[in-house]
Length: 185
Image 1 (cartoon, rainbow, N blue to C red):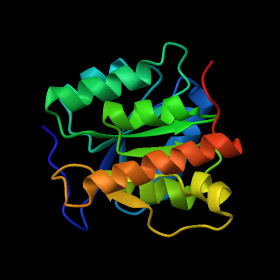
Image 2 (cartoon, rainbow, N blue to C red):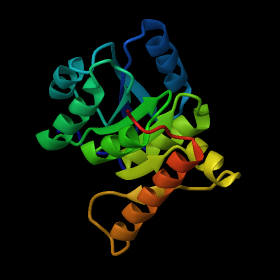
Image 3 (tube, helix red, strand yellow):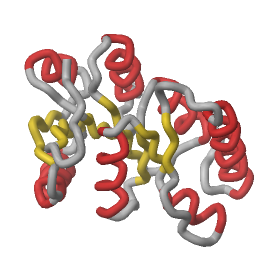
């Protein structure tokens, strides 16, 4: 099992993206981050199973646009396996159902591809600490300004955890109504 880092430790990241040049670009960006080390780069989510069994991976950065939606399945399997690898999903044009499915599958982060490099770094650090990160770009579109520290605890349900989930659901519903997210057909 991967053991999660204390403050100051390196976050070991596996990048999963079907596009070779996007995968390579993400790896180059991640390598510039302090305390982040890319330990694997693969083009198929199913290859992540082998990687996480053979080396420690703290966070898997997975593209949600695979035709088979295999990223969701891998996220669910990682959660059920008992491994402590956390998942951050990236997506181009998410639907409400996609965002909900990602979080229900056990992901600790959700980013739009248009998100900035700073948001990516924050999402990786939040996931490594077990916090849930929702892309501020979505929240910025919703509220017209950039909120700070939109993080929620996942495990160890705090007294406000149910309220946090309800608030997230309300935010996602507002995003759907305002056209930021799309309803799956």
